[in-house]
Image 1 (cartoon, rainbow, N blue to C red):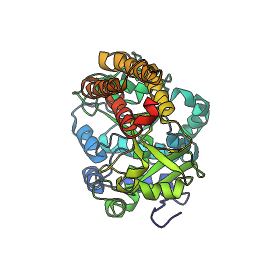
Image 2: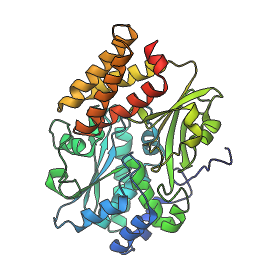
Image 3: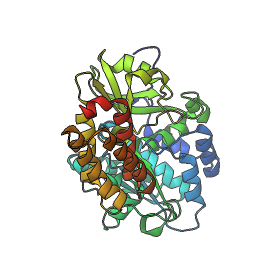
Length: 386
């Protein structure tokens, strides 16, 4: 690994005992640990980046007697597969992180909302959960975990749609506020955190806020697990320090002919070669839930964009018009331009449509379509037009 990129070994390290870390964490003052989480700068690793300590603080402060912890394992973003690997290799760390969250906020019940396509790992996870329940009992910790399966809907990665799905309703986003921290699952205060986020909370309980935020930058503290795919000689899952330049990332993982990197999956941003050196991977630059897809000069960016729009058109829940109709029109629009049925000016109209979707769509699906659409059409316009 290049010296310009720092590889980290917190998530997949085999030399730390999750039960032991949890046992020590349970001795901590709850409010003091929340302040430590806030001090660490840990932000949600699912992509949204909301401060984890603040979310836990709000939920703990809620007056309700019943509270819940939900691990969002609905990993539906194209190009992202790191949560699957985490759940396969170190599931006990995830369970311990959920239990720690439950202890801090006052929840006795946790749920793993598992992506529908990951049903093949359900039985194995269930066995490990049962083993972990015995560990909880030995620590006098009243906390139980249950698996709930998704049905393959991308939109259920959004926390309110996820909760609606868990309640047996149609999986579609609802308006916020109220936020889940105040009124979530069954109208009770609920922490919804990504698989990776929960492990980092557990890690901070072991190493402390100072050591964690010594990695990364002021705005992007710590490390992050990345799913690397596409035109690369090193596909796979890597835990790396945040705040790296994209040029350094490409130097390490590119195939020598990388012309673009899609940062953050289909809902993320497409960065062209000329901007590699000025792009930071982090919340002060381009944040990502983990997906890093590399494309070389043999790839058609029109085909890439068409693939994304086809995906969004299929996955839109259809609840709001800007997203439902907008995705369809963007897809039809680029097809019409490619077929010479529409001229160059029409592409500008499509960009304006994507900007309207960004403002008017109800949830992150419709709001994020413009990210990839605008960056690909702006940077690779000749590949869309000709």
